[in-house]
Image (cartoon, rainbow, N blue to C red; front, side, top):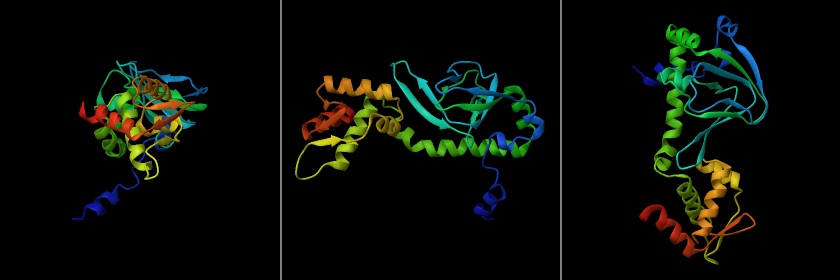
Length: 231
């Protein structure tokens, strides 16, 4: 038996979005339009509904007890289902807050209806399994690096790696050309957390900054490295 041939049998069952739902389920949905920066679901709410995005982009975030806000993922019409993780994990609260980045059109459906339908249709179960497994596989690398790092240490990690990648023999000063949003996207935190972390690092004299530009010397690099990995 060849594993790749077995995979190929179900090669088309790789998505779980609005387009794969049968008409009998689509007819039970309610189309809702969200303006940019509008909450779709809030962390901690009971997952009474599943939302299938058909237009636009939304962002998943989660707030932590340390005051930081981490960006998890972007959702669009291709991967656009909100609430499936909670539904099939049988958890009674949305794990993240979902906010529309652009105008978003989503079809809202009762979770209980989706659950009953999927559990009685093996092809839909296979789609759910592939969706969750693929997401876990893609995120496992970063989770291994960032699992124990809070927002401040994630920014330290970014600066340490940036210095390593851009240092040269002519000077020991590296100017970080990346925008705050680039840093946020790279380490999975919000723009606000990046700004707060950079202010803390400047106050602790781990970096120098001026007009939203960060400068790292070899001395500052050593401090960042020690505070990240050795303390």
